[in-house]
Length: 267
Image (cartoon, rainbow, N blue to C red):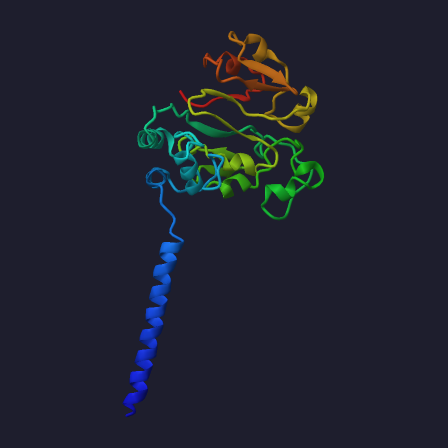
């Protein structure tokens, strides 16, 4: 056996390892970046979904912005009040109330309510269908396309597509807003979790046209606006809107709505 070859090989490998070690040690000192411990601590309080609901690219990005004072401790909608309280303590500031929000789909046009102008066979993608003639198979161009793109982007399994319409689970929704961005018909809105009544229609057609297209559409009669004792309801583009800062949840609008599209969320 040639021991000389083995010795030389071992020496070369050791030399290479030594050079690499010295290089890594030099690089670590040369390019070392100081870690902001506040940022690390804030990041540990965030859920890590990277949903973008806070308006920043990721949880890491949000943690960096909070640590620098460029974002509020209660910026994470998914973490909610618990995360906001922990982060405020880390930052040494007073806790701000985190108003929980949930998504609602402003459409009741399920398959048994909507009229159809053709049968659609193709990709289950609302964005693709929204650029086809008539914006989908349903007669109402403003309604839920029913193909579940919102459900596919929800990281919390809070949205289901049932009978041609999307439904949001109020309890499972974290209010991240991913579905809001995904809906090509702008049908999804974030409302306060404790909003007792919501308007579930977005059609901007006039009364007769709405009735011809859907059995569950706002006809723009304005009765809810006239009856609201606190002026919380306005009518814009033939559709009712609720101002939740004014709404007292009296339920008068829902009880008098002839189309029954103002819905009670909970008891």
